[in-house]
Amino acid sequence: MNAPASARPPAAASHPAQARSSASDSTDLVLQGRITGADNQTYRELPFEVPAGTARIEVEFDYDRSDKTTIDLGLTGPGEFLGRDGFRGWSGGNKRRFTVAAADATASYSPGALTPGAWKLLLGIPNIRAGRDAAYTARIRLTPAAQADAVPQQDARPLRSEAGWYRGDLHMHSAHSDGNCAGQSGARAPCPLFLTAKAASEAGLDFVAVTEHNTVSHLPALRELQPHFDRLLLIPGMEITTFQGHANVFGVRAPVDFRVGSAHVPDWNAVLGEMRRRGLPVSINHPIRPSDERCMGCGWTPHPAADMNLVSMVEAINGGDADTPGSGIGFWQRELNAGHRLTGVGGSDNHDAPTSAEEPFGPSRIGRPTTVVHARELSQAGILDGLRAGNVFVDAFGSRDRWLEVQARHGADEVAMGGELSVPAGQRARVLVQVRNLAGGRIEATLDGVQVGLVAQPQVTAAQQSFGFDWPSDGRRHWLRIDVRDAQGRLALMGNPVYFNWR
Image (cartoon, rainbow, N blue to C red; front, side, top):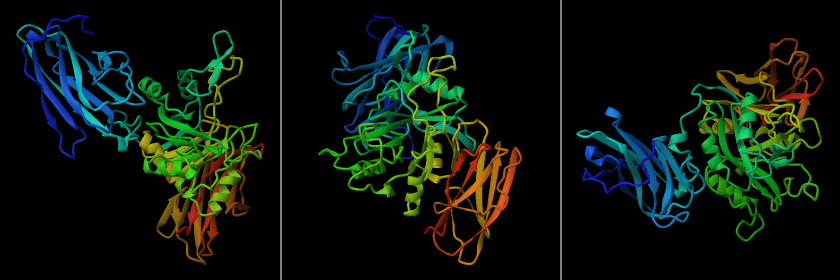
């Protein structure tokens, strides 16, 4: 409920009490007070101080709603903003939580620089009956600039809290970069982000990372869409697009300086080091694409060479390139052989999000390939930690039900894909593989980049099938991974390595 456009001066009422929280409390400020019947149809201001170097303001507001008492909510900051005296937004009675940062804000509020100084919560009081009073509490969390990419507390609650396999797409674009699709007339037009999320939901995905080229302008749209898509996790990302290669960064909530080769960003290591300091995982995209007039900067050609210890992932499959010379699988395996533990992932690199097969350019390719992650929960932290851990496989054709699980055992120790197992020379590890919904296909074992015949009977003959074989150790460092091909011989599922004696 919105307050009226005009209001008389507020009647006398109790002033809000301010308290700083303890270090163990996630709230930085608590503003508490009361309103009375004399405050009916007036406005109140609750001042609070925002120090320099603040990256985000989060507000949670609650009050006594008995006897039809209603309090509306807004926010102002110091100085002028958008041609007004610091006005940052008004949500009336429709939101009790909101967040404001430089690059994103809850719908109803405007993103922008957080000028230090006196800020105010605006309270509009459209209704409190005569003779009544009501208590209110505002909890305000202030995130420092050093933690600008931290997940806002209001976004931390997982969409699903159980551990399991979650299916997603890690690479896509919308109107916020070069994504386009058919408009109402059929002509090409910048494609609204809503259509991307809708297509991903219809594809049965659990999460997507929206990775626009060199911009975070899509963050407010993601924040607006997430409450609606309450079964699809929308991860903020950015494709760092340079003349010397492209890479996705996930979980980004502040700009990234992408100008590799400039005085500000001399080389890729400057970018990768900054992402490491910010705690954000980086994935190299389509690493062996041409990097010339056909696709400027698309291939991975950093000079000087990039420190691959600062990289978390490689996009081994981009779109439909799994069985082509353009696949990144070979690049990824060479880096594994060089001693870098990198999770192999896939991404559609989708630039077009039509919603039905009847549209001029066909059905969406979102989710082809699908990256399938074992995570503790469906949240940003859960998915990104799962990607780092490497218990991940890529479903090249984006099915909803194909599945691969790999475990390696030695003695009492057991690890999944991405895990490390110590096996002394002369001893053997037992490797167990489970495959679903690929009858007619076969499994392949790859050791240190070379296919090996460790599986005596590799054919998949049932909808759900288990395989087991022994791996003999020579005591040295190795990696082993499993792929599954379909009945037509096409790569259908790409597994991640188990690492032996890696340390």
